[in-house]
Image: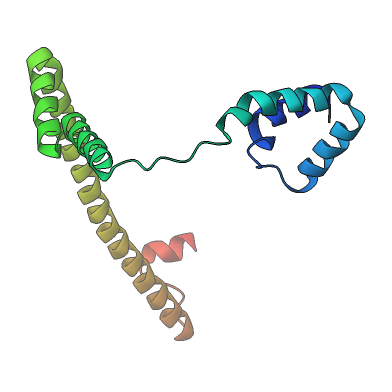
Length: 164
């Protein structure tokens, strides 16, 4: 630990008895070897601690604390409007300052909603059509397997005989 670190700790934590553990051990070891830091610690103690030694802690009257609480609550009410006020003010600002931009935004939202709805419904139709195709292919495969087992090698059409 160097002198600057020790002096910072003297002014921040040591005089308030907030040092502990390894840091306190290093701090005390430095003070034992460094006369300048010991002198700085004594001067800081005389300037910051000694003048207040004989003082007693005054109790703050409850009326003062109540006044502080009321002012904080009043300030909170003044600076935190309700969600209705926020929504109303936002709507007024949006339509009052830039009505064209507001309408464009509303139209974009409506168009996107419609497009997503169409896409979803189209996907449902495609899934139904795909299911029908799969069922048809399964039927054909089953028919083909049945025909092969019975000794037929096809659907019994002349065109098959020509190409097979």
